[in-house]
Amino acid sequence: MSWSTRFRLRQYLKGSLWFMPLLGCLAGPLLASLVIQLDEALSLPAIWSYSPSTASTVLTTIVGAMVALTGFVITVTVLVVQMATSTYSARYMRLWYRDRLLKALLTVLAGALTFSFALLRQIESDFVPDLGITVAGSLVVLALLLFLIFLDRCIHLLRPVAIAALVTDQGRRAFVELSSAPDVEEPASAREGEPAFVVHSPGNGVIQAIDEAGLVRWAREHECVLLFRRAVGDSVVTGTPIVDVVGPAGDATSGRAEIVGRVALGIERTIEQDPAFAIRILVDIAEKALSAAVNDPTTAVQVVNHLAELMRLIGSTDLASHARFCDEDGRPRVLLPARRWEDYVALAVTEIREYGASSIQVVRRLRAMLDDLLADVRPEHRRALEDELDRLDLTVAATFGDSTDLDRASVPDRQGIGGPTVSAPATA
Image 1 (cartoon, rainbow, N blue to C red):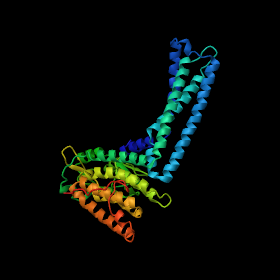
Image 2: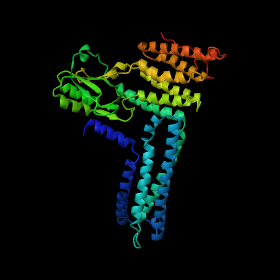
Image 3: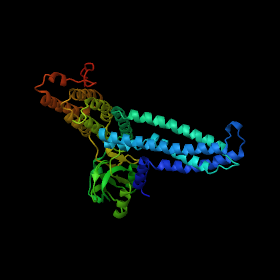
Image 4: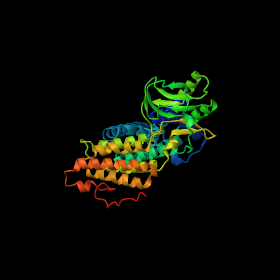
């Protein structure tokens, strides 16, 4: 099985809502069999004894309750999906259906159901699985506790700021993992020479991830350099050239198969190796809030609060290290198209500035973010921020040029409007 197949399988299992509950269904009868054996071997106190009729009634009630509660959990989940998709961003759903608490709750519910049903079949006039009934009751209590926690989590996650915080955390983790690549100088010869062969996309989709370690090992073994024409997150169609192999790479047919097997394609972008996708989701949420149908600029301001955290992290990093992966000797083996700081800034600011141009608090919060970033990012990144501030000035002048609020729209405010006066940061 190739690396790309294993990656897609992991992604599928992470996003599936049936796999863990299926394991719970299978574990229920196995646990019931073990408990029955313990029941026969142990002598339990009289307080744990049940009559056959009582045991049957309790287990039948538990089976019905688990079915009903499972249906209610699914209903709540569907409602959250509908609201999040229509109000925030459809891209957020990739994080929601991976929620571990939701899967744990469905697993316990399914396990408790099959466990109780398996016990119910073992009740006879001369045998009652007393320990099993107590365990079934404990599983019901556990399921109820998980459901209350799940319901509390759902209610809190319906807030846009909670979703923005979750997406920001995912983006920060992905960016930190990318930033762990060693910072080495790339020799000019790494990009020189005609390719020995070109690897084309085997299908249609988005490049979700690449196996950097595996590709580096392969390139080292064959004394070549892999030059990617497409970045992680790019959409490709069947036959699109994606990799140039420069150097004595050996057999082209086997080389193409090896490289293709280490590039994962899917129907949508993922955050794992593409932290810019987290910014894309945050901007989508802000745009929905700024639409005429919603008209909620305060939500857009809250999103900018979290964007500022991601942009500060990105702006204080040498982004060149994201473009190259080296072997043990420090020689670049895999070279990727890397996003520049200007690309991240344009992604984070442009559309929010465009759709929020008429909102005083949005333009004020954007200005405050850009001013703060000027003091925090690397010196070579400041020019892009100054350019964005110039664009913001032009936007404000075009929107509020004849308005009495031009003075208010032209000053920074970390709270959007109503916050303390923001002093200009020192950039020297």
